[in-house]
Length: 394
Image (tube, rainbow, N blue to C red; front, side, top):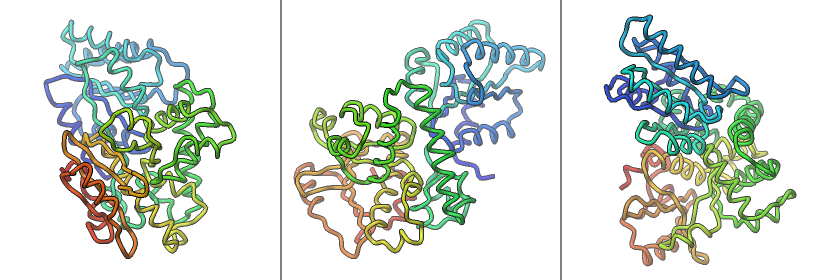
């Protein structure tokens, strides 16, 4: 079974004496549970592995029961360490308060229970961590699968990855593309929206959120104002509602909205979003075209390629600490602007026979970036770019 490098990170931390809670956060179907199963198959520690995802109406008492069971098993084993793993922890109300209570009890009584928590809603996980568990945890962000990983695990070439994205659970279905599209929409998108957003967060207009997701996927890699979006939606709210729903979709690893790069923070926040899926499967599964048709459509394939580059950037942004945005003034545009500290990198994606650089020239004039990159025609190949961690560009 293919092992992502995050497994080695987790193995190392579990063996350390420094006993911080390890928190694995990432979207559904990126392999968080698989990483845990691989870890448990290698460890000599006695353990409990439970998930809150398949259980209904759990309260914090359930966490307490898991902890008490772990303490009893540790005592009966005669060992000095025990591993407690809880998946989809954000499904339990007040989970962070109960985890804090149990951790503090263990620390006071010198009970060495090592804890790993998993969650697919980054917003709810981070809220609980910052409210109750400050100084007690470390986060391991698990992003969507990269081109390198899909190539190594399944032998995919670049075009397969650009169209079918990075969901390993769907890899065996791509030869029956209609079945693959249904799997992505029914088993992944619908489950993520229903379980990770609608069941856990107040959403007054669920139909509006779902329609926003569909529109955003269709326009992935493109800039669209909230006002124009409202004109396309039947169940219209207001721009504030749309921005909030887009944030919920982003925190679930589905669809993000890149801000316009500007030295003025207020202007960034008020800018029109550039829609960007976190995984290109979310884009192509919504399209009527099939893989072979899309490759022959020069305009469509160009948009899909740019979306794949953007998905690579934002999926790795949390790990690399790199901020991703875009820039546009009038007709001048730069596809992606990366910032880290005081360094700026401008990136233009081109899949045609020629490459225009007027937008880059204007951006360079205004902001003096430390680096300017073409990806595709006239620059670094898309394949090479998708094998690079954005942090390596700085």
